[in-house]
Amino acid sequence: MAIATSSPASTLSSAVVEQFIASIRGDVIRPEDAGYDEARQVYNAMIDKRPALIARCTSAGDVIAAVNFARDNGLLVAVRGGGHNGPGLGICDDGLVIDLSTLKGVRVDPLAQTARVGGGCTWGEVDHATHAFGLATPSGIISTTGVGGLTLGGGIGHLTRKCGLAIDNLIEADVVLADGRFVTASADEHPDLFWALRGGGGNFGVVTSFVFRLHPIDTVYAGPMFWPIERASEVMRWYREFITQAPDDINGFFAFHTVPAGAPFPEHLHGQKICAIVWCYTGALDGAEEVFAPIRAQFGPPVLDWVGPIPHPALQGMFDGLYPPGQQWYWKADFVNELSDEAIARHVEFGATMPTPQATMHLYPISGAAGRIASDATAWNYRDAKWGQVMVGVSPDPADNAEMIAWTRAYWEAMHPYSAGGAYVNMMMDAADEGQDRVRASYGANYDRLAAIKATYDPSNLFRVNQNIVPKGI
Ligand SMILES: Cc1cc2nc3c(=O)[nH]c(=O)nc-3n(C[C@H](O)[C@H](O)[C@H](O)COP(=O)(O)OP(=O)(O)OC[C@H]3O[C@@H](n4cnc5c(N)ncnc54)[C@H](O)[C@@H]3O)c2cc1C
Image: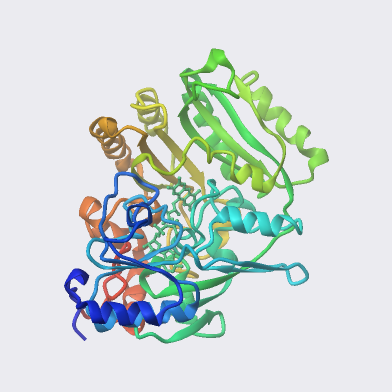
């Protein structure tokens, strides 16, 4: 089987396009249509791609028609879930976008404690639906992120230490394959595909619905604590010991931020660079103050302490306002095993020189429940790493791009020697920026198995607008 090459979709005859439009129930948006510019926007405003056709799929039937149309006409195909991908892997130039943003719906089964979730849902939609039953499943930290991309890449968030990654709670997925077949992948059906979907990204097909395990998580004790940047070294040294040994009920990611210059932040902190830990405690609320008392006393009171009881969906949406869609976005990541004193010293240098008010660095813990799963149990390889680290250049103003990209790259280059090698695929740029070797490094020992499964399910690499796993034998 040869690797698929693509013909520009813009050269298709209008009769062929009209036939496709008639075959699906959702809208198909073309460059000449009103709404095209809005439909091609993704979260990262740095991405400016111009697809020939955007097919808003309303059902698995529409997705099957779109996959068949793309394959039969040799089109480049991108699959869009929530559109949050940093390098914009939910869209492409002069191809077909299979846009799942109208493939919604969340059905919670409160007795079985599961939820079936449409392939185009965002996490805010899922959290809202499950919270009504006092239940939740692990996701990320921003509610507008898509379930599709976040889950297929792994899914690190506030509940990682308690309940594992998003993929560790995936029970089954309905998938449209490159040949147009519709299959269900689970531990019992197509187990090889199910293994690959749990971390292998959008490489294996279009997931039209996911079934997740839910947990009795309702109101948590959570939020950010800020300390002055001058104390960052001290805070990081304490944090590296504390979080790796903490009970699973305590999650906390470390961050550098600049305090936003507006309400509700206290005026005396506006514009100040700080270090933070964003906590999420899932233990009994009546014992939470006691658990956090020694943390609060550790360095004297934090300069800002917004940790308290909060409904889980409110925590999930807490940072949405700081990171709305439409900003410029450039990030680089690595997995980290050790935070040595030397590494901390370098972190602190870069934390103190964040180039824009929105720039940040996060260290997400991968210990607790996520770390107890074997590295070859799912495609997600770095179970031994202690943290997923990401440095993020963000700004509403494209004029800042050169400076923030330079800062992000320099920061990443300074820290890369202290890393475990690969990176979390959901927090990387694309192969043009990172090099294809980074994808291989990120899957490590699981890469060859993934490449073999890719050769079974997508031998011509139809699904290649992603962190691409090249089918074995090509
Ligand atoms: C502000 C922000 C916050 C974030 N926070 C977190 C976080 O806390 N934790 C975390 O783990 N990640 C986080 N991420 C990273 C996020 O997981 C990735 O950007 C992910 O790719 C987004 O998924 P999406 O569906 O929104 O993106 P899209 O751009 O729509 O898609 C991304 C990739 O997934 C594929 N894809 C999407 N849906 C499907 C589907 N249903 N079937 C098949 N393929 C599909 C696409 O083809 C594409 O390759 C964050 C990103 C941003 C921008």
